[in-house]
Length: 54
Image (cartoon, rainbow, N blue to C red; front, side):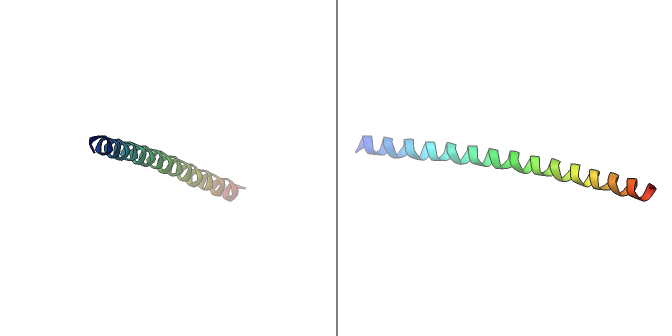
């Protein structure tokens, strides 16, 4: 029985670690999308100023 409990605890610990890693990756992905969005908005503004100057 003790081995079974240890196995369960190990499984839960690994699952928790996997979940934490997934959350970290999702946070990084969202940060990248935010940077891409900001760059796109900046590029759009530059394009609008350029075309209005022509």
